[in-house]
Length: 156
Image 1 (cartoon, rainbow, N blue to C red):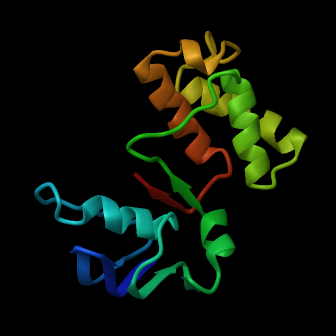
Image 2 (cartoon, rainbow, N blue to C red):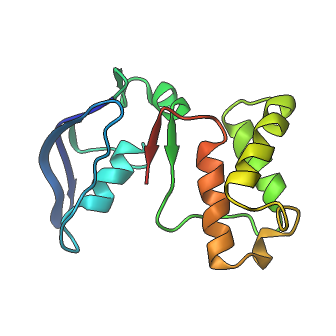
Image 3 (tube, rainbow, N blue to C red):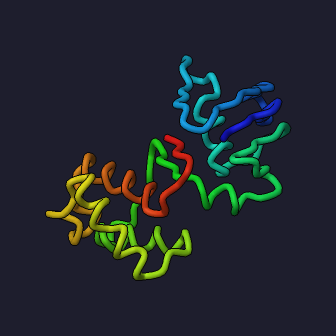
């Protein structure tokens, strides 16, 4: 499912990720452990397509991230450590917005919302503005948004 080949990320004064290669098979769980500054977040951001590697390759489900970033992102859900929410949108509007980013039509979004709202226990506050959400409610919303398009891969 995921293959990193000689992945490197260099900044002007530091090498954040140095020649990382690994494979994660379909159905496998994989985690990064290490001290602050070890390159965990940088590697995850490259895998999610948020930053480009200086060298090396990322393959997701056979697609090369550099050559087919849209195909990779279509099948990937990403839960960032510091998500951004539009405070003036309701939770429902935010999920609809994310669904549209993944090219879901209105009917598909509506069909997928109820199971997600139930799973993450958000029915009581989904129509409130996200700026009023507690930290935990925001985390639930971001997790639901990562699942709206039924990704084959989840990066957290």
